[in-house]
Length: 68
Image (cartoon, rainbow, N blue to C red):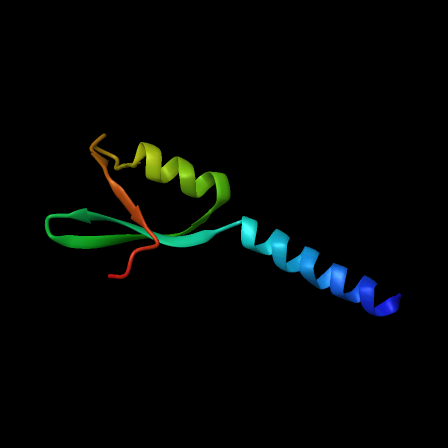
């Protein structure tokens, strides 16, 4: 019974940790990549959907989780 509980706990921990996907994000400006850092879960979805707006109001398309 103890082995079953340990196995169930390990599966639950692994399953929950894989739900919150995190990726490094960046946008391209004048041919250079500008790093934005790591985003996870809802924040990741939001920045990919809406993009990144700089101080001048220019909105850039954000790319996350891609090989550079």
